[in-house]
Image 1: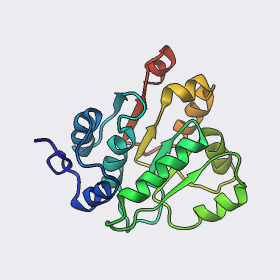
Image 2 (image 1 turned 30 degrees about the horizontal axis):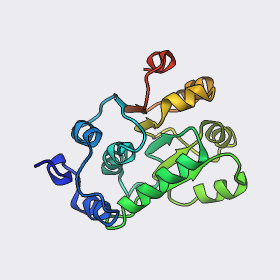
Image 3 (image 1 turned 90 degrees about the vertical axis):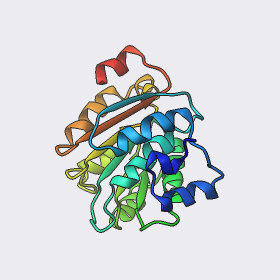
Length: 195
């Protein structure tokens, strides 16, 4: 029987999942988690909303974080503030029993000064909307130079909202990226170009 342990997920993260009532991995999780845990890889995952994509990319991303290093190691781009907040909250819940891995959500519509102050604390993962992230980079409030893993969540939504230019700009901020993971419900032409 396939479970999170057989997929290679750490016991501490499994406890966090169990607290959320997540016991058995979904199809996308079964297919993606072992691949992403195996090492550096670029991946395109297609699955509908509500199929567990956040755990499919979030758990492997958390495995890659070194809590002893005090800099941003992972980046998740989301099309909306609501999704960004939701993803950051899920990551926090998965790490309830593990060494503290800190994720910070940044997005438009919130006071930027408050987000800049939050980013001065230890932050391992940034969950961001594209426009706000570019603003923070331009203000030198965030350093993405050591990010090894970047995730585009709901990439089709980001394209339909007109974020192609911003995505290209953000990717240019990431000189050390070793893994690019793109998750989308659909695969329109614009996604194929990014891939």
